[in-house]
Length: 247
Image (cartoon, rainbow, N blue to C red; front, side, top):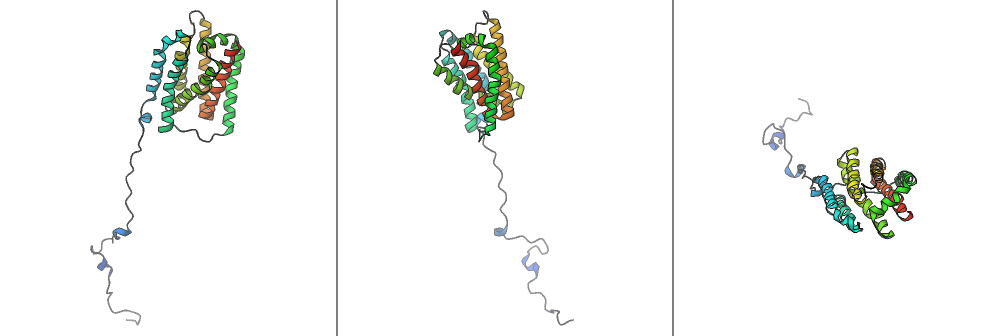
């Protein structure tokens, strides 16, 4: 035995602190990390879990149901209620649902929106100006400049952009959204045209509506929803507003 050896036994062996005599020692409760709380499922509003196809069918039903108003020469009420249905679903999903709000936009995307609107609108105006004047007059009746501008700049782009380029764009394929939006335009506008008397005009307007809706969807995919919104506003002014007052 060396002088450095301690002949006395350890008065406080580790086993004295361990009731299990050899098992791993448990930390006191106040030193343990609290258990992870279970994650609660995120609450989703009804507008996020429902099928947006219901809103589309409801808007179509309103547009078709109000078709008797076409003969009155004042389509404003029919347009307001039909676009209003799309706007209610779009705004509800934007504010309470899973539709991503428009954040701080890159000015470049806004410029692209104006450019695409002119790119699709100016050629249509140049090559179809002779037909557009009478067709647009039939589509919008005897609206004043302020009424027509309000529909083309505010009501229509708000409703259709939030619904088709917002809700449906995030849950449907590109081609399906283009077909649905073009079909919506057919139901909304073609009953106002005298298809039997002017079949060529109806065909040209149909092709124009298809091209416009495809362009809006492309801009939505390429530059975002705000750019598609601007594109539709510019195209509406060039294709509808200008021929309405220059014909």
